Length: 399
Ligand SMILES: Cc1ncc(COP(=O)(O)O)c(C=O)c1O
Image 1 (cartoon, protein in one colour):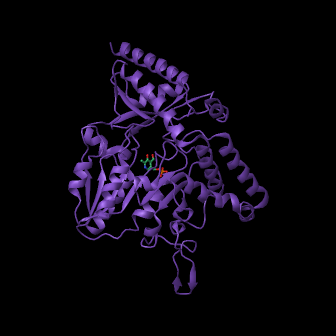
Image 2 (cartoon, protein in one colour):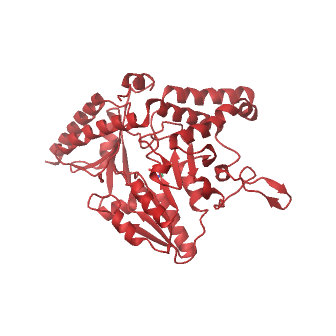
Image 3 (spheres, protein in one colour):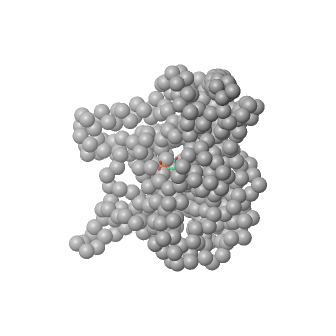
């Protein structure tokens, strides 16, 4: 089904003033989300924070229903978190590892997650194993299968990396994990809001996501999903009296639902607005959103592929709205800066976030143009014309 672009543009207030191809960084919030956030904060200003939370009880609770609808799970399996990293960490650090235990991950893994693996490697002698890629640059499923043995205590991968268009074959990984009875943690930070994510179809036991990227929610919001039958076996690394109420001076009881991973003090305005952002994505439908993103990113990739000096750096059989490239005429940072002067927002990927993948591939930095459904073919045309001009001026200077 076609997505209503006119509605999407009309409900993205400033989309005519800027070409925003940085949706993998933080998307532009649509009107209902931004209005909800501002309205909530105005209520806090007027009535007080605690009083507003009471008045807004229903909206705050709605976040859990919206999250469960998005992921096709139960409300009690959802926690509100301040970002994807903290969501991921609260789950990851709940696992107890012993020397010789193995964690299987992929080369496209997000930098912060790799930091956490290495910290547990230092602390407990855990072995971190990067499953090699196949010839398409996605996680090699056969290699992963061959690595399964009694030592493997966790399979943990990023669905979509921060620095490229790859979509890792998460559902196939889920099958391998399930067959081996190994917990599967999925970092879906770049997937939520970009494509349908069905936790049972993927077969993941834990999943984290963020609000500000493809879900178009506010910054400093995120969510965590933990499968019902795993929750009670995971003791969070940090507990407060929301996660574990005190029941006597010496005893506490950890909540039986996913809220055990939360904090008592939260970004309430963000939580209400993230609920609206999820509803908003669902109102278009994730299949329609993915279809539109596929169309736009396919168009951009095919045109970039024809541009002299430009090399696309996206891997994978299936690709998403994150389009990455390098150009021999100009550095990614210079391209980003020059595009910004022409009213085009892109970002670059460099350093820690993509370090494992990039060092493996001999890449240092790439331009990341990340498209969303509200972007248009005209914006892509303007982007291409501007980039062509920049690169041609740069090559004349070199000559
Ligand atoms: C794959 C992936 N995981 C995790 C994160 C971290 O998300 P957050 O900043 O919400 O913690 C990012 C952010 O770019 C990401 O791309």
